Amino acid sequence: MIKKILLLIIIGIPVFCHSQLSESLAKMKSDAEPDFANYEQLFFDATEYIFDNPVNFKSEEFVSACRIVDFWKNEDTGINVPIFGSFYNALNPKSNQRYFYMIAITHYILDEKLNSDRYLKNIKIEGQKYSEQEDVRESQIGGAKIFLDYVSKENNGLPINSKAKKFLKAYKKGELEKVFFN
Image (cartoon, rainbow, N blue to C red; front, side, top):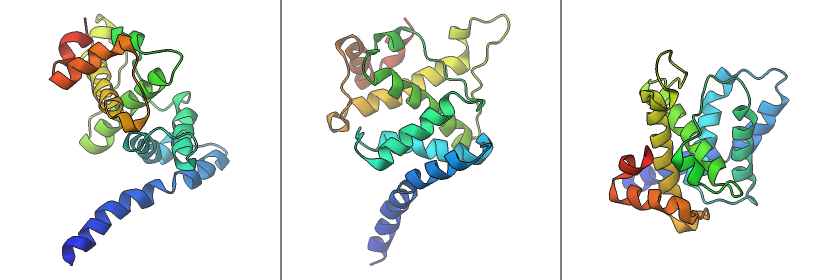
């Protein structure tokens, strides 16, 4: 009996939390001057929802999650998303691959900040090449792993193009770092 109750709680909490995305989006949009600090957890929840569910642009919650991401991606959030490099260039610019990779990097950065108390700034450091900075590389590879895990599950509905398949293959072998920064 206790096991059943715990299972219902474990399953029910994420479902309940995520069912509120459309309502939270409406509230956020109605805020005359939204302060990111008040919506950071919502932004994280939206990115988490996206990677916990198949692509479904007919789902109100999925679309709300994407709209929350879109709302904040051009605002000053203090989150710098390094989207460049051979992996990014291999993704199809005419599909949603680059968009979902950007969301994956954002999710990784927010997860590190909110759940591990680590802040990946991804700001240019004088005297260092931006693409070689430790925080930039960690954000890119962390986001790539989230993205590749997502696309590796066919039921998620986000196919990967042939140029990016070498990265997926390396990811599945546990060798992503070897091909990612070359």
